[in-house]
Image (cartoon, rainbow, N blue to C red; front, side, top):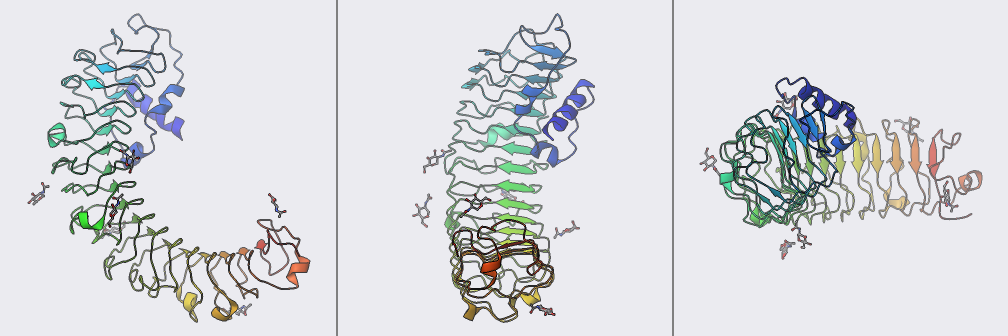
Length: 448
Ligand SMILES: *[C@@H]1O[C@H](CO)[C@@H](O)[C@H](O)[C@H]1NC(C)=O
Ligand SMILES: *[C@@H]1O[C@H](CO)[C@@H](O)[C@H](O)[C@H]1NC(C)=O
Ligand SMILES: *[C@@H]1O[C@H](CO)[C@@H](O)[C@H](O)[C@H]1NC(C)=O
Ligand SMILES: *[C@@H]1O[C@H](CO)[C@@H](O)[C@H](O)[C@H]1NC(C)=O
Ligand SMILES: *[C@@H]1O[C@H](CO)[C@@H](O)[C@H](O)[C@H]1NC(C)=O
Ligand SMILES: *[C@@H]1O[C@H](CO)[C@@H](O)[C@H](O)[C@H]1NC(C)=O
């Protein structure tokens, strides 16, 4: 995959067509340009190629050669310049002065501490600037208006000033993760006017509040591993983002699920918080919400009953590692993947799963299920492919549907003649014949 992407990027550059970005996924799939060092360029060294670099058509490769400064004599028609994995400490005013055709500049993994205020100003065709893994304390100033993608993760940046982004209205991707950005470090309106901005990542920075922004085209917002708490998130912080599809807000300090969220949402990741409450109706009308991850929170009792009602596209719901004692009511019938493992559920209401029309994967392992809390046909769900009931206190093997392929029952209290038929260690092995199930796992850890 990576190779294909790199080659297609190089092809674009080599033929020197306009550097056109097809879609957000072109950006997402790239790995910080680190794949460029795998590109072998066979062309003979041209007379103007900097010492020890490789120049092929308009691509100049100077990665991994211990450079302490930007080389001189870079051909003026260069479209892609790769300087990653060197020891460059400073970007000087004149370093890139003549590179009027440069589309992509890769400076990842150097020791850059300072960048002259106008170092990038003359690069009027620059679209991608990769500065991750350096020692920058500030974002560069006077970046060209042509810029579409800026990556500066793993630096020492503490502030994001509005002025550095002024007029950069072609931005599509901004990656600011793993920087010690101060709580109030993102200046109000910093991303204002970026009508094309689709992807913004401010993860692993320890910010405590969500930047107040009107970035109306944002589709991906990634805020994982910060110190966000509900008290510091304004009510309309997310609903203003009218195109938002994916919100990642895991590993924060939330006690309630954030919202309201825009109707365009498809994926919500809010794991590893302290969420104990989902305000009723907060997810109402999210007709395209497909995937919800809420594992590793503090959801208790039936605190979430009704919360997911009416989400007609919901396919995947993960509520594992919470403190639920009851199965929530009002889950949409569209769900196909439903994970309740590692809770405290002791009983299944009669006919509870019969309302699901497409349920294929169900996990209720590591709960407090006993036979008395499991009605006879509770798990006889016609669409089910996989059922995990391991680590409970069941004594009987529950009735299941004929099409079930994988059934996990190990670490229960099952006393059955099956125990004498099935080899001791059948866990995760294919086992045909009994119940016509591919995998039936009864007891990996107990001997008969
Ligand atoms: C965030 O704070 C933790 C301590 O709470 C610290 O270890 C970590 O380095 C900080 N991260 C950043 C990017 O500053
Ligand atoms: C966002 O837009 C509204 C109205 O369009 C404006 O009142 C507000 O000041 C803007 N917010 C920021 C942070 O610029
Ligand atoms: C999380 O929030 C609590 C209050 O709800 C606060 O006392 C604590 O300091 C916060 N922790 C972090 C890491 O922000
Ligand atoms: C939901 O998805 C469909 C199909 O992609 C789209 O046409 C529709 O506008 C979306 N609804 C909202 C509220 O974004
Ligand atoms: C499972 O349910 C079906 C009807 O949906 C029924 O015909 C079948 O006998 C049940 N299986 C068991 C083992 O009870
Ligand atoms: C069961 O089999 C797996 C691999 O097939 C093995 O790693 C494991 O140690 C076995 N467990 C026991 C209790 O024998």
